[in-house]
Image (cartoon, rainbow over all chains, first blue to last red; front, side):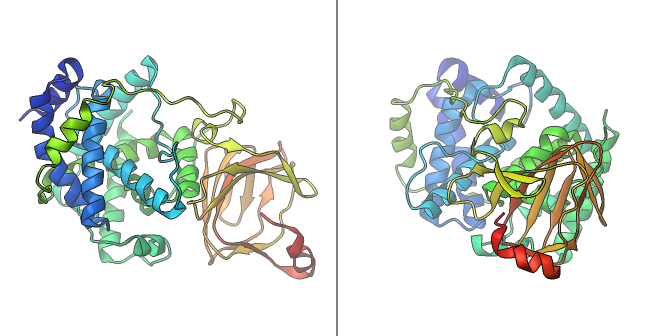
Length: 180
Length: 213
């Protein structure tokens, strides 16, 4: 299935069938990843729904020339999860909250071109990463963890899994450094 | 000018996974604005996050969620509405800082002033701009929590090296240092700090109660 094409269908024609296909594929996966990251089933399901609503709303902002639908949906879900955790901690809703560092404002044309060049560089560097190192980083997103553990993680000495991941990211950075 | 000091691989991956609080992610985002290598790294980590999403074993949604979500689509505009830029911060500040309100400069010590950044209360880390005049020698200090610093102007040095524009410094309870500001110009940093500073020496202990960073 060409997911990027389905996002384009949503953007251009508000195609409901395309939306259904995206929902049926990605909502259960967002829910699963959120639960692995410590969200309750109820919260994970809320985030999955909000994520797909954002896909509908922001479809025109997605650059269909890339194959990065999953990465795009991943960042939407991640930011919604962070917002949800912060709202819960604040007790009162933040009407203007959004994860620091990820602006929700529309990019300028220059920024769009820049982003395309960035993504090309990054996918070349990723393509040269050995499979086991790619898996080591990917595996870090599957770790079952609660938010309390995450808060402590900065102070915990690097375990084997973490050090494998660190080595993999070092290699990735060396690849990126060679991309000009 | 090339950047020498970067956030650790661990910090960048926690940033990409959304596991840092506002203050900490602001410190990383400030560094990312001036460091293409770290920006690319986070982009690559997000791409791998996408691969994780694609291969995770799906967990079924409750009955009727697609229908309920579709019903909500009817009430949504299809184009992403741009949010207004928050006001209150001057233009030269990095974009990620301009998203927040910034309070007035406050005197801290001779040659040192600070300007709090108004983060939502959910952040366990405070963030502020710290301005020190050229050649200022800070008191020997350690941290009770994690401190992240990104240089916006000027430079400072401590036993970990020299830190100039774009450089990122990480300090935790194990670090005990005495930064000295470069003599070329005043130094402005974004600092994200959890816990308190602990000053050493007789003078440091005397002024401790008066310095609140």
